[in-house]
Image (cartoon, rainbow, N blue to C red; front, side, top):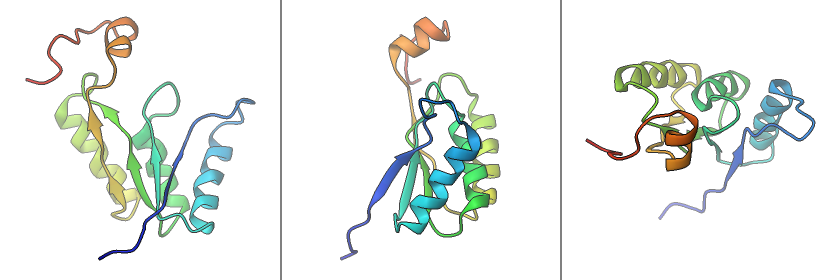
Length: 119
């Protein structure tokens, strides 16, 4: 049986809006603090895959994952292309989480139909 693995959610902009440098420091610190995984949501902040590609270049061991990237706004081919680029930048440490997002985001913010979340 594998031992307990501890992860952390990162990537939200802080209340001061300090931005990318502060966020990347969160990943470096999570790795140095011994976390095995770091997860990023793809909502209202940085693009999760782009952020994880950058974080992958700043770290060496910690596994990086999306929680989750919405499927409505990205064609599957381009999603796969971006995930592959992120996987390479992160040295094979990416876990890609996909999901339909939230109805309010898809319909009210993006103006797309949420009637059929899967085809």
